[in-house]
Image (cartoon, rainbow over all chains, first blue to last red; front, side, top):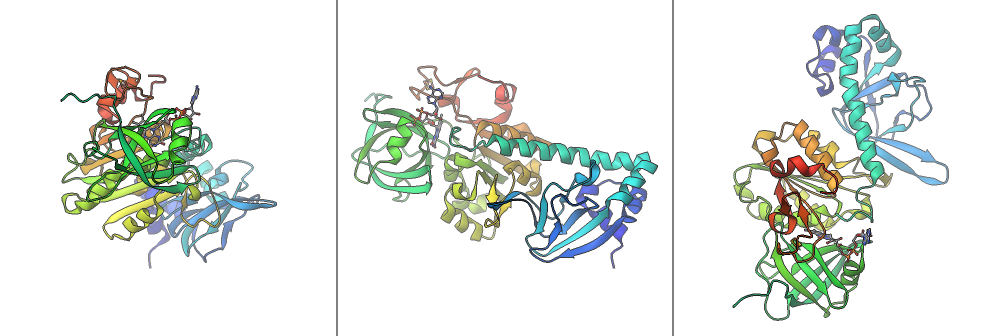
Length: 155
Length: 275
Ligand SMILES: Cc1cc2nc3c(=O)[nH]c(=O)nc-3n(C[C@H](O)[C@H](O)[C@H](O)COP(=O)(O)OP(=O)(O)OC[C@H]3O[C@@H](n4cnc5c(N)ncnc54)[C@H](O)[C@@H]3O)c2cc1C
Ligand code: FES
């Protein structure tokens, strides 16, 4: 059976990671399986664990009373689900629902935050990976907001 | 005989296909003489008597008995009048004008098409050309992003391409409800996931300018050299033949040196506003 450490180091997100740090992260990790339509987390809940998708698709959704559920984005194998575990007050700001059978690695947020505090090298390695991800997602959100394909902007 | 570059030839509408709530494809056949066969990426000037003229890309070439197809979003007087035409009615067509998608240069390479919104229309003849000559190309991928599931153009054709086993077709929308089971997110997010080999791939990008800017950035981040990237620029036009200067873009006229341009040639002005 594949070790958790091996699984962590095989994730594209952790490409080039020092194996010693991989071992630390694996110490906070566990495997998950979600059936289609199961929730990885709900909006407003404590962001106690984030996920590395190994297989399957997840939709990030927002529910608003009286309106159909809006899909904010989809995430796919190799992607990270959830960044709110990094930023106080550590609460999810959307639902995450499995659209297909999903296999994921869950990383305990408090455990990893503790290791990042204790060992700045681990903290820096995590920040180096999360900062570009956050910037990419922010840029994507800007593009979505701009509604570039809207009626007033012919292609 | 000298051809008057401003003189449109009469074409008759064969069919108007409603692609999305505000976009339709008109299929046209010449009443008499036909314009020369357009190459992938070229556009024509469509003329509505008493309304005006607009540059519109060819979305389907009149080859093997097919009509000339052009896809328009109704945004202003001309485009709205054209998509309201009925079969049997006539309009004027002159052209074809402009540069060509690098389907010849891409021979022997992998090909990556990136389309945003209505940008799939000018790319469709290039996609059709590559698929009709499949053996000449390596890996072929099309990444298509649009606003919502209702705004997806050419659904039947996309589905047909998807059924081919050696073409990668990825569609994403900016916003959707739960009933949509495809990807949600901007088209640039598909680029790192497409797994293309940047050194052997020619990318053809078409869509709103902002979407092309972000796509070019993502392609460069993936290691693609500027000279492998082609974009299609739009500027408002009047003559379409390099005489009036209306479509100036830096030192170039988009109607002559464009609309399709190799990115390394325009990189220095691509992000400059009002050029
Ligand atoms: C090479 C090329 C290829 C193209 N291909 C296509 C294509 O395949 N399909 C397609 O639908 N379009 C295409 N276009 C775009 C199309 O030519 C323009 O949208 C054209 O202006 C439409 O003419 P119109 O009379 O319908 O609209 P216009 O009246 O010219 O209006 C066009 C847009 O400009 C805005 N506008 C109009 N007047 C003003 C004003 N005074 N101030 C501010 N904004 C204004 C309108 O709101 C609208 O968004 C292409 C353009 C180029 C250059
Ligand atoms: S439109 Fe007249 S020069 Fe290009």
